[in-house]
Length: 248
Image (tube, rainbow, N blue to C red; front, side, top):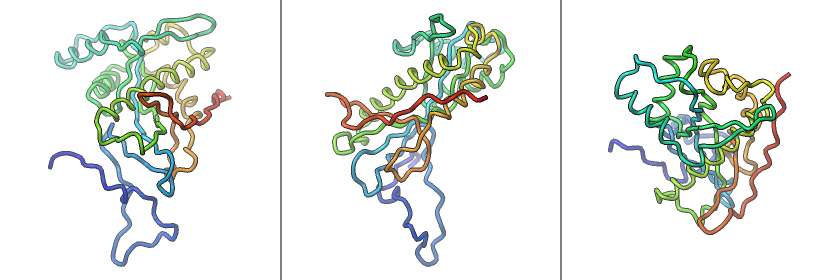
């Protein structure tokens, strides 16, 4: 009571091809999990790899200061977000032939930290320089994994997969920023054009890289890659994600 429980595996199966439902039963809408709670979607027929989808919120830490009109509790949370940067999210990016330091924060979409940054950006969208620069609101990551060797009922396994998704998200964002470098200036990345200028440029490039995972009943598009186990790489090959061409 009071918590979300995943449905039994049978309820995640794709509907029969005929589309018929038992007499008197209404068609049910697709199952949705709360923000940040993944649903394991097995391959058609229940064999082979499964996919672990996780939506991520990505922001860059920029040059601006937190506004004085921010409530104290929110200000304290945002200050921690700015100061406590995981090693793998403290990185660099190639921009027009130069290497720039880039501090990112990556959160599961819908988490308290993601909501805190998103709400600040929404209420201070014209601040310049901004303390945060939006990079992706809902990055649709997905990990291919072997359900016979990874048990998602173990919270530590799910946490490990989320961490892998965050690490891959950092790599992806670095790539699309470099790809869009002719349209991005250092000052823009540092928040001197507000919080939303970079997102407008790279969102189409991110969308262009998303693909359906072949052989799966799920029709959504993901940025998919093979999960790694504790002892070695996944037996599954990451789908090829060729760079998207910039819009004309």
